[in-house]
Image 1 (cartoon, helix red, strand yellow):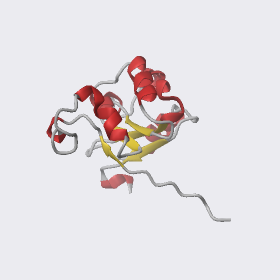
Image 2: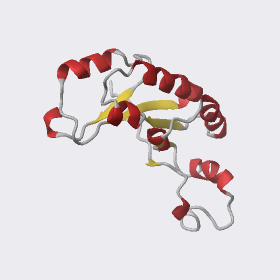
Image 3: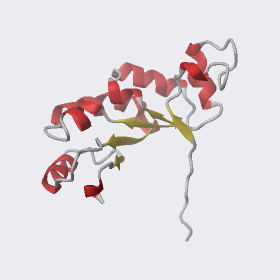
Length: 148
């Protein structure tokens, strides 16, 4: 039996001022950019969450404003990956999961982008993975050769 493969095309974010009059039509208010974006793409990587985690209500609003089949990839906070460097992630992971829960079935994956100078530590990584919510898909972006 052939495996079903789904391909989605999107971008890393949709709220870029320099896209106005290039991708977004002249005169389209910024408040309508997400809806316009979803007319052209069926997924987006939320990069803003790397810098500041939006509140759960914001995620619920985004869910309501996007089509049924739209999928969100949410980048985990740099606090978890770059500041804490995967150490003691219990509380920040809990906050992340509570916030992204507002996306419901539209949450595709949580992207964990590691800093380029984070060297692989099996014990640290196993401990971190043990705290991940097994009901949510995660993807890991490694950036140091020691992870290979």
